[in-house]
Every structure is written in structure tokens, then in C-alpha cells.
Image 1 (tube, helix red, strand yellow):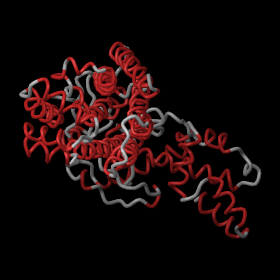
Image 2 (cartoon, helix red, strand yellow):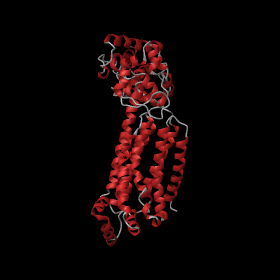
Image 3 (tube, helix red, strand yellow):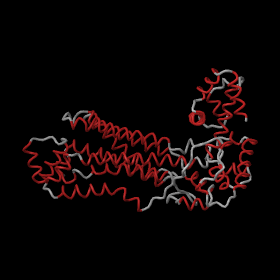
Image 4 (cartoon, rainbow, N blue to C red):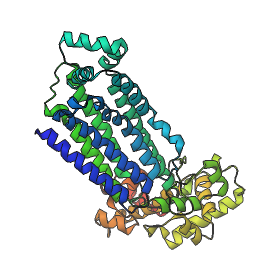
Length: 451
């Protein structure tokens, strides 16, 4: 047995085991785990087909030769539906249209294939599995019973091109969904370490990269007539895809439930805004409500200089501009006086309670009056404190990890991201710039921050 076949065999066994674990694991994402289990099984099925081809099983049962290959058209839709489900979208029968291409390919391909006699089926699949390599006489026989339409489809690699485009589109849809999910969470939480789906974003980008490698190392040699079916490099994509989807499955098992955060997000919003955004609960959610939708968020700005004109999506609100200004001052005063931003788990309802406001009122003031979300509002205070600490001689040499915890961040990476977003520099670059700057400029910077 070759190394590639050995790895594929291990992949099939691991896929079945992992799918079982996903299906029976106790989780707040039961439906999402079921979708991920289906994706893992669909990947394992493609590997199983490669093994059955090498074992010669389809020589005895040629009618089943191309059934499993159509499952690759479910990879992109399943990954996208998983992302929808884990972020709280309620899935229903309308989402089934994502599988229409897979159904069409399965129906059209197999209806034609099943009309052939067993000898014709063997001849045709042998031609396909040798990647369109055969002598002219055999090719003439094949096209005599397949017809010119199928010859055009096969020789143009239509199936592969469609698969690559479909998977790429779904990959970018998942990335957009994650981006919108994170924007929505920023409306309600000051720390997103366990909710931002960074792992899914990274693995989706890797999936797109694997597609590029598939074209480069699997199909490009084919187009240049350099294809060798037994060469490891032409089969490497299968091993890469296995590793990728199994990494997604393992990460899915370790993903904490996002349902409680979705429920809290809903409770923090005005009733009229919920209706406007059409927030819908998932079928497997635990709790009275959860869902997912896109909220448009403007780029964060400094709270002191934020424009007072209300956001257009808050025009239906009954809050007067006078109340908005008063609530804005209350939020800023309580944040500064009680230093709530030092709490790494601070949420919008907690800030609202401290300011004697409701969570919907606080959300409306932040978005409509101050033109920023809760996440950036809190982190502005944290970054200002970090800058003061870095500029103070007695604390300038504090380790970055300690500094991040000191000002309210849960991790060094989130502190770096927020600091760079606010200052366009990393903390180290900021400290170096202030050290090299004249003393008058450093003093001015300290005074500006204190103000």
C-alpha cells in the first residue's frame, strides 16, 4: 500500500470516529455539530472512493463508481451552514437550495452513467481516473456512446472549475459572516476572545489556500500533460483537505457555546431595532431567544470627539437629543469615575446598570450619539490608560503581558490589536517613538491623554 493510500485509509477511519464524537457530544451547538459531522463524513467519503478505486472494487460494481465524487459539491455549503448555525442563525428548509448544485450534478451525471452497460461504465471510469489519458481508439469508442455534450463538459474540466469557484465563493461568504458576527458582538462585549471565531476564520483562509494548491499541484500538471496518477504531489491535496477539515472538526468540539452571548445581545437592544434587524432564533438554541444578523458598525472614534448627530438607524427611536446628551455624559462619567473598563468581562448591561440606564438606552447612545460600539468605547479608556502607563517614567518598562492585564485586557494579542487600532502603532513602537521624541512632545502627549 502506498503512503497516500495509507494516509487516506487513516483519514476515513478518523473521519467516522470524529463524526460520531461530534454527533454525541454534549454542546450548546447541537445542530452546528451535526452539520460539521456531515462535512467530515463527506470528506471521508471522497477518500474512501480513492481507496476503492485503488482496490479495484468498482471493477465488480461499476454502477457505483461516481456516486461519492459528487459529495465534494457539498463541502462549501456545509461549511457555510455550519458558520450560520454556530453564530445563531435559524436554519430552515429555504437553506436547502445551497445543495442544489450537488443534487443537479448527482442526478445528471448518474442518470447518464446508469444508462451505460457495465463494460461501457468501466471503460468510461478508467478514462476519467487516468485523467483523460487514453489511446485515440479508446477515446473514439467512449465518445461514441457518451456524446459530444459530455465530451465538451469533461474535456473542459467543467466539474472541477465549478467546484473551485463554488468553494471559493462559500469561503468568502464564511469570512464575511464571521466579520459581521464579530461586529455584532462588539455592540455588547468588551472582550471577544472566546466568541470571535478566529479559529474558523483562519481555517477558512487555509481552505482557500488549499484550493489554490489544488490547482497548482493537481490540475496545472494535468493541463501541461505532466500528470502522474501515482505521484504523491498530485494526491497531496487530498491529505491537506483531510487535515484541514479534521482541524475544523476538532476546533468545533472545543468551541464554547455562543448562545448565551446571543441571548444577551438581544436583551440589550431596543425592541423596535430588533424588529428592524429581523433577529431570528436557531432551532437548537438553549434559552428563549438567539439569532444572527448583520449590524452596520462605523469605525471607532474617540468618545470625547464623537459626533452628536444620531445614527440613521436610530431615527425611529423616541429618545430626544437632550436625553441622549444627558445619557452620554452619564455613561462617560461612570466609566471614568468607577474605572469599569478595568473589568475584562465588562458587558453593556453592566455599564448601563452602573449609569442607571437600560441596556437598550446605553446601546442607542453609544451607536447613535457617540457613533461607536461598546467594544471600542471601553477599549478607548483601556488604551488611554496604557499610554499613560507607558509614558510614565516609573512604569514605562512594565512587560507588555502585565500591561495588558493591568488595563483590562484578557490577552496580549487582543491588547496589541486594540492598541494598534487606536494609535496605528504597537505598544513597543509607541514607547520607542515617545522615547526618541523631544521632551516637550512627550509632555504634550501626556497632557493630551490626561485631558
